[in-house]
Image 1 (spheres, rainbow, N blue to C red):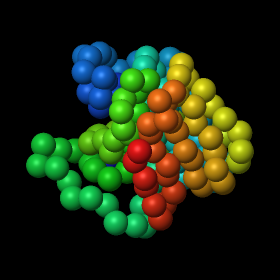
Image 2: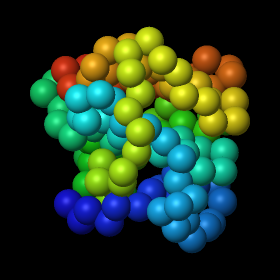
Image 3: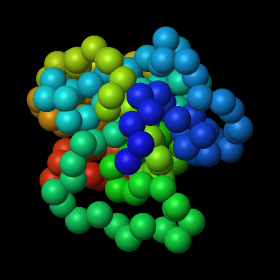
Length: 140
């Protein structure tokens, strides 16, 4: 996996259907879990979270995905469901502040809450998003 250290807006904005260039690292706002196993970055109307390792079942990789699969999740302010993303980079290497358990991070109408040292739940105003741990990744 290529560790670009920057948020790839190409995968994020694919959710929103808009083309864009990747932002400079200074433009990325986000957080990491205290354990460092999950990192999330937001830009525009999108939020993306990457998880270092998944111990549970991962759905089959779509034939349209030519990059890495299974460790990347996204939601937009208007999404009707969180989604698993196809990506060739990661936000795990970006220096982000820790989000301590039971604390929240807000970006526009998306709110994330650290539900533990290595778990997070993110949802938009409509209640759509995802909950992540190494053992289970739930989209809603």
